[in-house]
Image (cartoon, rainbow, N blue to C red; front, side):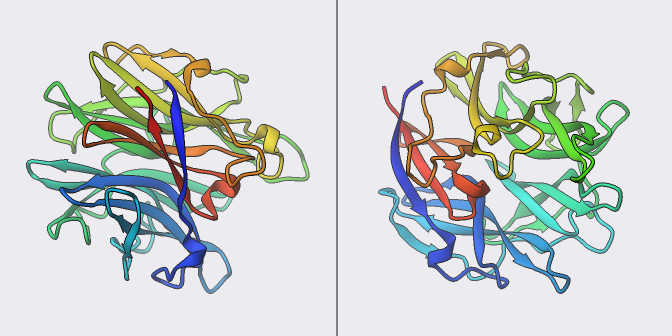
Length: 317
């Protein structure tokens, strides 16, 4: 793969965001219409205690990727007291189907002994993606016997008459140093469904091999079909000392498959790298692949986990 970077196309600090959100446009997810592209993203506000809450907003672009408008409200309220998505949604993965526009919720909630837990829920839009309503307060994919925590980062597509979901699951909370809180380790899994609600998965079996070490964390899988082959981009990092150490932060990885089950990792073919001195010099993360008018595009975040927005790249022939 070879990507042509088109630059950062949206900066949340340069516009008015809903719900007192000030920064962050994380995990951009595209929904293509006839004459424009809507990109959903996760943004943040602080609650009364000063802790973050993650909301979903969107920005509409024309097909030359000039900004047309930004949503005036969030598209989906946070979950109710005690629910899996009480404190945030990251991301909202969008899928247009014959039954309407589906939104798969990457919900998270705060914990006591560790910082966070998560699960995946489902919402549906009846107004062309402006707002979404949950199908219920509970998740459609949650912790299980061999995937005990941190279920999240859904990416759902229909292939060969079946729904496929790629997601992450936690394998361990690990204390790397006595003077810092535990950090999480998570891998990429795969599930299938006939209706998009009831899912069958390979519990506890990562589908992508590690590159760094056993403690490598992998996130935000995104899959596209080109010809007869399926291509996945994702991001990966060290699981400790990654927040302020750019050498241990997120980079993009690549894998391919011919059957949607067995994946070959080949990061040397990812075709995109950080640009020194630029907005993505220290980090590449949270990729999203989509097609528009015969071309393949990549949305992604850069430095500081998307605090200052997201960029765009186009796959070259």
